[in-house]
Amino acid sequence: MMSKLGVAVVGMSMMLQAVAQEARPDPKATEAWTPEPARIVPGTATRAPSDAVVLFDGTDAREWVSAASPAKAAGWTVADGTLTVRGGSGDIQTRRTFTDYQIHLEWRVPATLTGTGQARGNSGLFLSTGTGNGYELQILDCADNKTYVNGQAASIYKQHVPLVNACAAAGEWQTYDVIWTAPRFGADGALVSPAYVTALHNGVLVQNHVALTGESLHAGRPAYRKHGAAPIKLQDHGDAVSFRNIWVRPL
Ligand code: MG
Image (cartoon, rainbow, N blue to C red; front, side, top):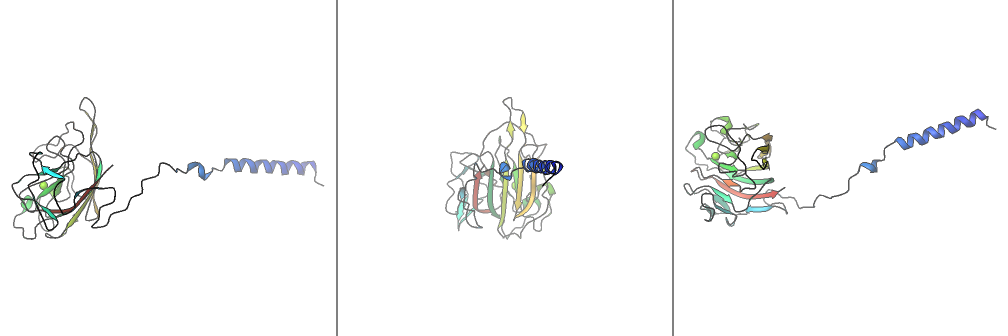
């Protein structure tokens, strides 16, 4: 027969056990079940994800217009599944406008380049046209081509040097995968939050969530001016740079 003291000890230990059980957090309490992320079919090297807006699939340039005269069709060449700069025809931009997005684009500079520095396979992916100048992720031959480092391929032109030079040889296809966060402005036009860019060049991280200081300028300091959703633009810098497999996923 248990003594009174024994009964008290057993009772106390049962109480402590109950308290300990109560204090142990329930793992279910921290599980989130909704909302479920949308199920999509991921892309491959040649196929866009199922929820992407395809901007160029090799057949036509219907998603693009002249940047100088948006009522006019893009003046670049579509042939052999590629979209190629026709020097002097001008920049082209998307018909649609975008705010935040993920983009995939493949580009190729000619294998037969003769220029140097900025005159060697120059084009550009303007992540937003902004108020006109836009924000340029540089496209340029950089396999064997010296130029200022904040103007080389995968630089945010005159703002951010790429973390590494991930260039392939001229004449080879290269990829850009970019996450763009548009700048935000207040009603008075003041900057609320800057634009951010994360970019991979040929699958290698080259810009890691860098904050931009404004729209790209060839000369002078970048500056922000209020804008909203805007087109994406590709640059005609005179070189016959080609593009293929361009798609975008608005976020
Ligand atoms: Mg350029």
